[in-house]
Image (cartoon, rainbow, N blue to C red):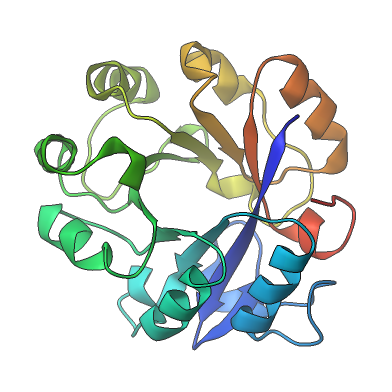
Length: 227
């Protein structure tokens, strides 16, 4: 069975929704799992309905406009949190370990490959998730000047337990996952967590090719995909 991991984006200590990574247009999340956009209530609703972990992006941290860490710590007591806090280096990874069960190393914000290697050489792999961020068909990164093929070679060396393939262009669109990126990273299919624009029609295909996990936000919260 393909495992669905729920997604929450947090701003100002509430869950929000938006499209294609355009964070300035995000609005309070409407979800079938709670009566409002309070993330702790939503986490409780998800747990009651069978979720056993949750992916959270702290958009305030990522944009350097504050944080939602106290709320995230509360949620981590309800469901183990996979946290994207915009980690840029070894020191920030070490700091955020206090707040979540697993931490995302995103290509979007990490400063260098050497910082990733230092993290992998220090901390257990079961606390680390690499996020391959893709935008407009290319590796999305503020600091790494490399293509998707080159980063695939880095992943071969690191051998992480889990790899998120996140097509930022498709986030919140509910238009279906762009399967072309899977071909590049298919050798890691047992480790891959698919993310970005997933809708219900994608699930059978992803399961049929051996993908075990998917991050789902919009389609989960509006009820078109269930846990």
